[in-house]
Image (cartoon, rainbow, N blue to C red; front, side, top):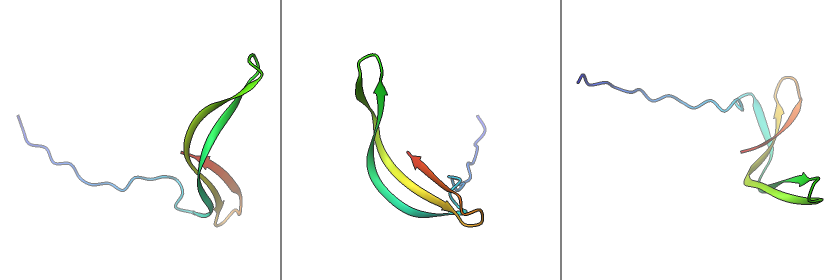
Length: 62
């Protein structure tokens, strides 16, 4: 079997042109209409990002 070599690549998060205004750990919830209650969707890092050129903001949870 031939030997193959893998090269390191830098992962792209699409956040290179943005400044982080806020970063914190958060829980994400969704509202269940049938049960008339909030249900936990997950836990992750919440970021509020601002694009350097367009000045538009976006909220990301990963």
